[in-house]
Image (cartoon, rainbow, N blue to C red; front, side):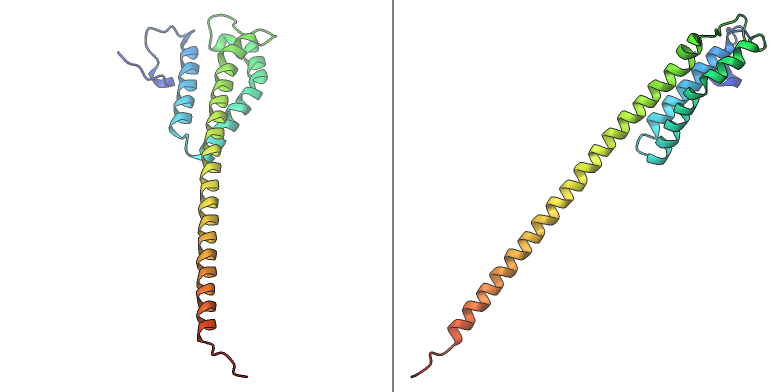
Length: 154
């Protein structure tokens, strides 16, 4: 049986004290799938990258809140002052997704740079070809003018 990890569709075998971990996992999977599906969409990738980085930045505040209110959603106190648990469970997946987005952006930029250089080379080759055609036409026109001139008699 396949389950979709959304807050409203958490498997029934998960205890209420661990469902939030499954929801967190589902959030990271949803974010990763969105990053993969929108890999050619620059604005969406930028929004996702900023969301990942801002989420990682806010992890200390989330950790502080969760240390105080862990009884509302968890069966035991996972959160410690050093923030190890939130770093592993929350920040590490976000940083991984951000790295994937950055690598994808570098790949797209290299493709764009190659396309621009190919266009520049084609444009330069076309300009050179037109210049050569123009020079050949002028040379031909110049040689026909010389042949049409009559020699001056003295």
